[in-house]
Length: 155
Image (cartoon, rainbow, N blue to C red):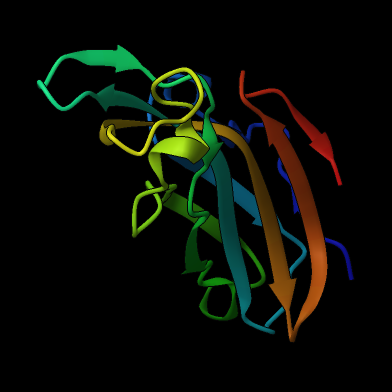
């Protein structure tokens, strides 16, 4: 079984939200042909985190090495089992987050050679990609990968 997006469907990843923040949002997705087996939308986002480096006197310098963000994940039942095989993504948002615990000053590239005297502060998370799947009974029936500018392609 394959899910079909309707011609009037404007389902999209909001590209204005990808490059400048730590979350991605899918809105307005309508899918038909799903039948009565419940369909689940899953959105997973990945990204990077930039940090400032604070020296022992409290002066800030930008870190030299972005680090991987903790991926974000969100799921939503499309409600197709109750709507004659038509399911909808109303608003699905997933957030990538800064690692916890924070990376070391060396990992972020503080103090030139990665001095241990520095601390990392002010994390800024940027989503670099997103992966949207629709599954039924664990089988993928729809899949899109999105880049940091919001451009999507079939998986």
